[in-house]
Structures are given as C-alpha cells and as structure tokens.
Image 1 (spheres, helix red, strand yellow):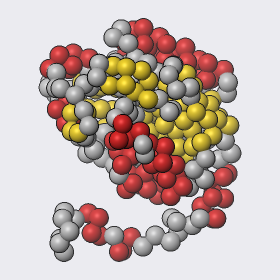
Image 2 (cartoon, rainbow, N blue to C red; image 1 turned 90 degrees about the vertical axis):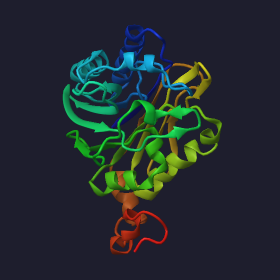
Image 3 (cartoon, one colour; image 1 turned 180 degrees about the horizontal axis):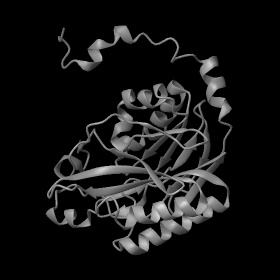
Length: 277
C-alpha cells in the first residue's frame, strides 16, 4: 500500500488552490497512493497573529468546494482522502477546524479539532469552537485510519486513542510555521509513530503568508519512527511511501507498549491540577 502526504502553498484564490490540490491528488493516485492527507485548512490562507473578523468570510459548509473536490477525487480514484476545512456550522456564528475522511467518495468521518492554541501567533480560540469528541478510526477496507489536527500532536493521549481503537495509520494535517515548533516537529511525529506502533502521515503548508513562513516537512513515518518519504522544502509536492501494513502488528509484538499499559493507574490524567484526588 502507498500513503501520501500532500504539501501545498495556498493562495488567496480558493478556486485556484483547490485546482492545484486536485492535480496533486491525481498525481498521487497515478503513483498508486491509497490514502492521501491534505494540509490543515488546505484551500485558504491560515490565521494571522492578530485576530481579524474578515477571516470568517473564508469559512465554508461541510459540502463546500474544498470537500466537494476531495470527495470527487476520492470517488474517481477509489482511494481515501482526508480533507481539512474552515467549517461554518449550521448555527450562525459557530465555526470549527474540521477534518473529513472520504473513502471511495463517501464521507465516513467528521472530526473537529478539540485542542485549540492561542499562542505563538496562532489565535485559534478566537475563530474556532473546540470539537467535543475523541478521534475515531475509519475502516477504509484496507486498514484503520484516525486523524488528529496540528496542535493536537502535542497531546499524546489523542494518538494513543487512535491506536487503541485499532488504527494503523495516523493522519496529522498541520499549519506549522513557528520556530519553536520546527525544532521538535519531526521528533514529535516520530515519537507518535514509535509509542503507538503505527504509520504517521503529516501534511503541512509551505511558503510565506503574512507574518508567517510555513516550513513544510510534509512526510510519511514508519512505526519505527523512520522518515519513509518527505516532500521538498519550499514548494507544492507529494511525499509518497510504499508501506507494509503487517509491520504494525510486528512492531507491536516487538515493542508491546499497548499490551503493557496500566490504565487503572492513569486516573490522574483526567483530573485538573497536581493535587486533585
């Protein structure tokens, strides 16, 4: 099986950006990719350090143009496509940062980012309401795929949930530009792969947007933490890796972290504060 991370430099023209993304999906499918991940809010510029009310004009419904393209390409190629949009909810004035998983063109999962930053120039709490559900795992017919979104990679509990629910592939769409995060970016993603014994796909945007310079590093990681494929640093592109899914089971036998968990000792993880009972 082949996994693909799609890296993109979004423009102010949503239609043009979606068209470039569609061409890259076609190229990945032509190379045999079965699961492809798009970057966080792939079709529009990302939030700037200062809150801007005009940014809400970029929001779209779940059946908006970004997801229509993702669904159509998923259907055309019989593949799994994980899309990411700035979602305008049914309730006016409510917005989410949302990932949608399409399998053969059918919407199988809607996951809304539950951990939102207001730091390092990313005032996401101003724009998005946090989601209220844990990550789920989608059965693609070939493997189990779960998704967490960008900032959530700093919270290892979420990727562990994907592993415990049977996921073999973790998708992480990101919009990552801050210097402090670049220093540990690949270290974190490799750790998710190793601790959970699964494949990780991470898709980032690239290029300058206002005050931010997105650094790419879109890649596919193996269960041993190896970088299996990585996109070029400064341009649109793909990272496509051929993977052996049986490596997940073999890795978990070799490093049986899931077997050796002691969840009865972890109740403090759901408490607030160091002195909580």
